Length: 80
Image: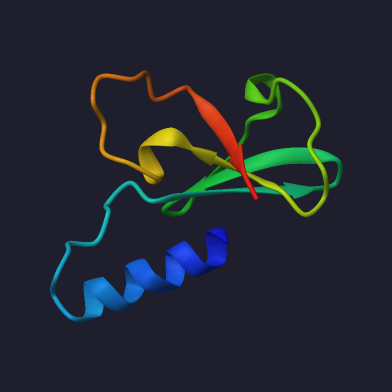
């Protein structure tokens, strides 16, 4: 599902309907740790992950799925 969202977003950017997010991030798991890639920076975010989720689920920042209406950027949610 996250890949589908990224693909759709890329299509809208290429058509000029939306602008590219300068702070786009991607959370992934490697070597039993969670990392977030923001531009060229890669940070370990293990301390932000509150619990384990199934392998076919993923973590994403809430602000990457919706507009920011005052929520804190540290909120991380999971989607299927």
